[in-house]
Length: 176
Image (cartoon, rainbow, N blue to C red; front, side, top):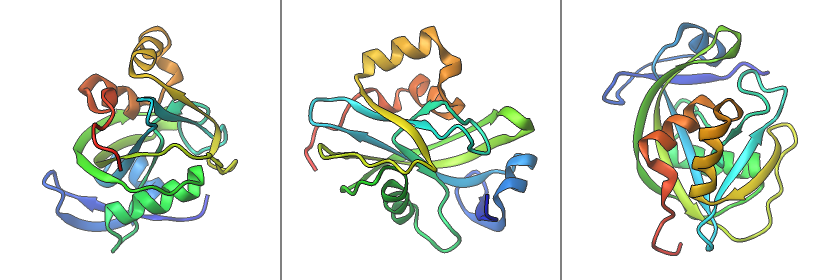
């Protein structure tokens, strides 16, 4: 993994510094992140299975795309960039809010993120980057809820928290 910096923030999302990503996850510092929820026109959510060798949460199912904006990069721009890098797709994204959570992960890492959530509608081909993603599936909200209830350990900590909070449970009404 190449060294990458993240933006440290206070609880109101005001930038308070820049720090190296892995060290930030070791200390559990609050930092800015984004997550993307891509729906198809049939009302199914695009899930990705994180590449097994990721530095944390490898092999787990999660939302369509996620990551951290670079210093000086807007969260919406970062979300579009990573959606292309991870899943090989481009579509319009709409902000749907922010979500703050803290979760202890494997290998002693801690996710403590203020997440900017985005959603979009996409019905085209998916071309996942094999360095980022070991697979994908389109799932209905009901199927996702059943799967998380029966095998929560198959999903990332943050995605389980999103589902518990009701974030991805209804597809957008408008067509992008």
